[in-house]
Length: 225
Image (cartoon, rainbow, N blue to C red; front, side):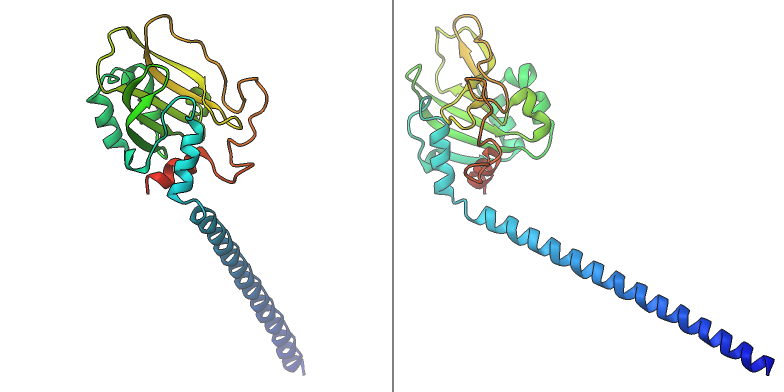
């Protein structure tokens, strides 16, 4: 009798243990399926967001950024490049000194997007230049804002004496602050804005795509694809 009771007791314990194990396994499988589904949805959403930004739309926004600074930029003037190609372009031009003066921190970091604009008319000077653009990542925002512009004139401009870097208001009012590298004849201009603010020092409203769903990094990434 005692043996029979012992057997039945153990049999019940085994049943409880097996049931518990099956329950835990089911919960784990459901959790994995939920996680995979969530990841797939996020990826699908991300892909859809990227797909709606065409190169023509990116070019239109680029012209919006620089409508007061440059002549109208055409697609044939836009070259997407990698960091090595951008650095080589920089070293071969009149703005080579900016690498050590200003750009080493951003060039040594990853995740940036690089574009070179060829034969752009700079309205302020009436001179043609190639313009290097860098869309930065968040760790560089405070020092370089969200975009760097390097103005590399095609020909030597005698009245320009030295290189300056400053935060300048570009033409895109919802997010107008850009780190500008240029040659000037007098004292270096003072900073006109800071990251996340417009030129009146109010909060900028579209730096992270709050209005349009498109960031500066998106624009250069699309033009670089």
